[in-house]
Image (cartoon, rainbow, N blue to C red; front, side):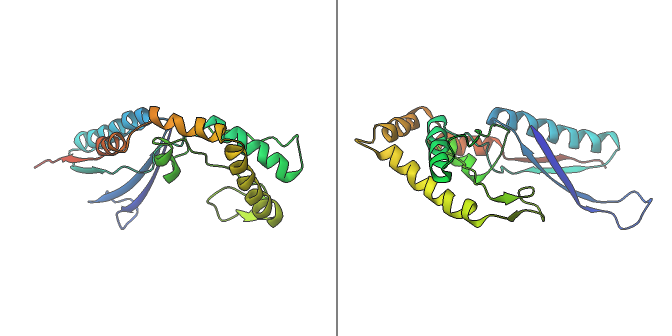
Length: 193
């Protein structure tokens, strides 16, 4: 689980207690349950700090992206396809389990999904130093691997694809997902006279 916060506004002078602080936080966890627990803790901490200092707090909690759950069978098919596309049977790809929260995470709670990875880039994701260093690996091999993955899932009578699709029945319904998002939403505060 991770908490990322940044101050949008925190006063206008050094060594002066600001009359208004605006902060935004993003929570990431590997399960919706952990997100709900972390959200309640962060909200409680913010309100408790304001109360302890005799201040007021207004906390608005909005749901962000939900945790990504990579489907094992989709990953296995993609990994073999990447090995074929790269012509490298020893290519080592690992399924991501580190609490990534993304729009694909929202979908992955309702249907089998995969947030695949590509080779041919350097630097940290979402950073200024991220760049493509090998366009063939990043674009051509990855596109080929995606096509080969589809072929693997649809080969013959699409038994592998049907097995993946059948797992949707055990996942969250759209209604359940919307209820989860609603539980992740709240607003309220503490006021002092």
